[in-house]
Image (cartoon, rainbow over all chains, first blue to last red; front, top):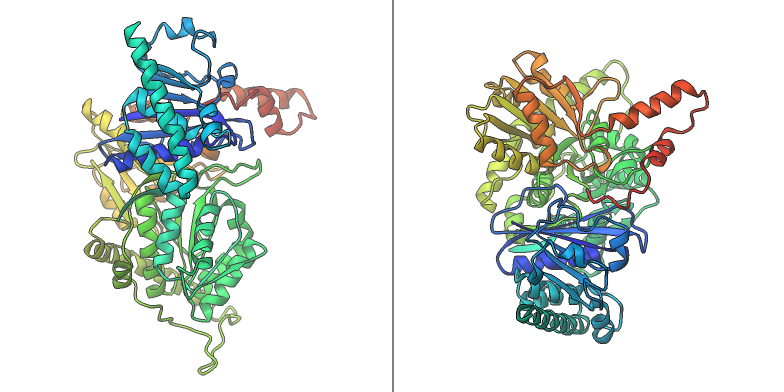
Length: 193
Length: 417
């Protein structure tokens, strides 16, 4: 089982991101379970959503306390919520930011993890460029596909097409593709370094 | 067809396949997505003939369902929590009149303190209202139970409540196998009412009944519920024949063979319990699970048989009888032939408190090692409770309890589980 926890703020589409990820997993023939944690539903309040992927039916209903991967939609949460809680040392982290782990003041923290599994992506910038709105979901899922290789970019695209009208879906797919390429490039550079 | 959808969307689609003719509802979390989905299907013309009636309250929702059903229409509504309480008088009436309404209850806690999250207090508060109450373990079963519910309701002329855990199921995206219209039509014939308000053949429904006959009418309600105990397994078998999968029935058993310790529960927590039991089985603990899919009528014989070999029973319930202990456990104890001292109540998950494998394993091991108290509250913060009690001893005007506890707790948004 591969467990993903997504942190964001109310209004950023955290719940939708988990749902899209589950649809992408389902499209690849896996069992997938996405569910929200309805803490505070206010816009801007910290929100968490979860997604499990497995080859077997998923019965477990507890929140994801020991994730294999984290998607952080808003880096300002780093100082407010224990976003890294329970993450395993070979876990993946993807943060929506134009800054690096070092610039976020996380270099010391990051030293305990496998560097090729840590990634940042300016997902909001890609969303503004392609979609025209600051909704970083699709780009983050593109980045997630690149860094974790748990799902393909095509499956992310298929999930977006299922969820949104054609025009919106295509714009989001472009954002996801750019994020996928960005993270892939970042990983190549890290591998060379 | 296999699809990956939200639980609410799956239920809305399944209800639509049952061809309801009147849907009346008032929105309340976490039920809202179900009736929104049905509203769209009616507005878009995919579900017809069907009238979607926006009502002004839950009391009106059930009253309209009663009227529609009495007029011979297949009627459906959905609610949760305070909504169910607000319609309670009409809920009893629907059962007393013997009208085959189907209602989803997206299980949620009851206030005060106000809480939108999941537990079973709402449905279990209505356990004696005369409705059949079915509990779904996952979204596939939630979907399937609605199809079975219409069949059952109309055959018995009794209303059926399908209970599914709010948020945990209603808002979870998971894989479901959506049946075809042909399959549902093969299982569920058109509604042929036992009683109907028909101007061509007039009757009155809803007589006043005095002491001379009231007990007989009430006794017949009991008889009908006992009849349901025969019909529910029969229709679950029929369902399997047409749809190709096991769903519903009275109880589900899991790894009961040679189990000394049996955990009894309702609803979606059964999944987490089964995973915990698998872990414990792999380290040699003889433990199994009894899931109650039909809470009313209470399946006495099935529970008795399932617990026949159990040395001890742990009833894990998302409800409590304040001042007594457990609700479900009281029912279980009455069906268990061993000593009632060996039936333990574990109240868990009230108001959406997470139920984790770690906490379950700990409490189940306490049971196995015969250290478990008769009544336990899973993961309760006793220190906090003690501080509140201390303050009450020290100050006459100790103030509102909920607010005091929230002050002690500080920021909750930072927590994950």
